[in-house]
Length: 369
Ligand SMILES: *Cc1c(COP(=O)(O)O)cnc(C)c1O
Image 1 (spheres, rainbow, N blue to C red):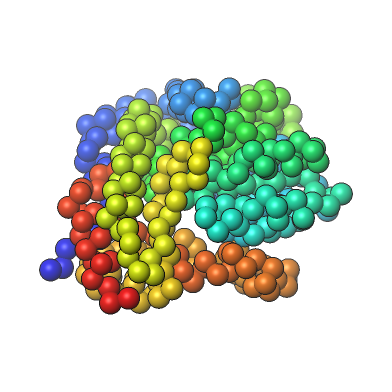
Image 2: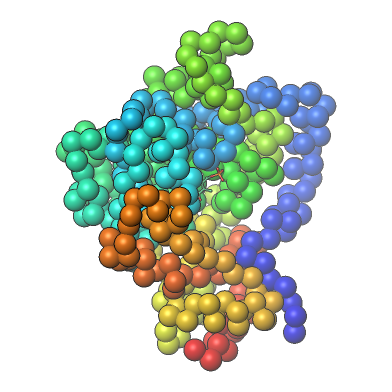
């Protein structure tokens, strides 16, 4: 039995809506609307509507979205920005690129999201903002973080790269922060066929600044009000995203259904810790991440049965070489440090069949433990 099961099957998604994608690509080529143009405007409008955000500004990728947000917020040298020890490096490296100082906070063991109590302990007179990461598709504790941000007059940039259409107490993801940053990297819950990203905000002045900054500092050609960068969503990606966007609610429901099915299939296996959905949070299951004390042996066992897994992420950010200069020890981030050797991401994608999921569950059950 050497069936191959990938972590996510992007080709299956393409095949499921092939005529719509092919027509979108052909339309952009027909009009030569490769940069800006009607598809980019349309995507910004449609994504804003779906995300229930007043303004959406598209950009080249999710990393740029975070950077553009912080430049628009005016981060200056010496400004401290607190973010999660457990994320992709884009979240923290953009703080440095914007001129700020990265301050890592540990995570909550149940949700892998930033621990508000640790954030509170890290706030200094130099703290300007917080970047909660809605990791794996589940939102951080926005009630507690919102209270801290209000009390200390801090901005919040929500890293929504993994959490399109998530919610907290019925409020949509991205509506808590000053700005929300999205990625449409191919493997994300809404993925382009290349790089793509966006920011959303309720603040029209910030929206205008971010739109200018992403386009060489001007909304009209040769009208450079400020210095900016070149961070554009291209027409092909915008058209592809427009074709995929109407399917996102259904794909998200399917992810939730599959996660529920995993919960049932994997319940009660000794040593295996299953992910949880915290009360009041609508998890969109970008990743289904289990924990096991013998994680590497479990991953090897699954690989031997043709099942692909991955680790998101193998080393918590404070301990990657890029942050050696901060001199962190495991005791500074006990939760993130303990989990980096236990976490394992299982295959989960909207097109996954029940039979494929049964295969994964059976393979895990056959692990000698
Ligand atoms: C993917 C991701 C990003 C960066 O997005 P890109 O589009 O790859 O630049 C940022 N933060 C998190 C949490 C991500 O998962």
